[in-house]
Length: 65
Picture (cartoon, one colour):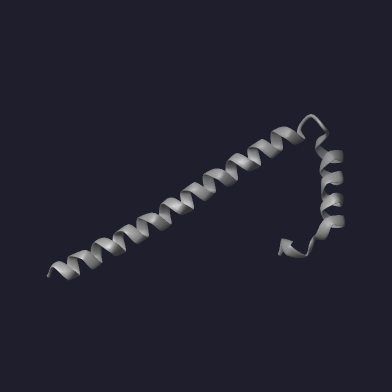
């Protein structure tokens, strides 16, 4: 979806964001977006690791029987 933006499109988006939000709000918005992505990434990695842990426990139980 966002892979076809390119450099000119990205510059245009940044200029529009600068016009809409102003230079004082952009760092706050960037920080909020970064922390949101960090939390999302850690939550998804926790879910994936939980699933693999459950699968490994099932395999160990099957081997013990």
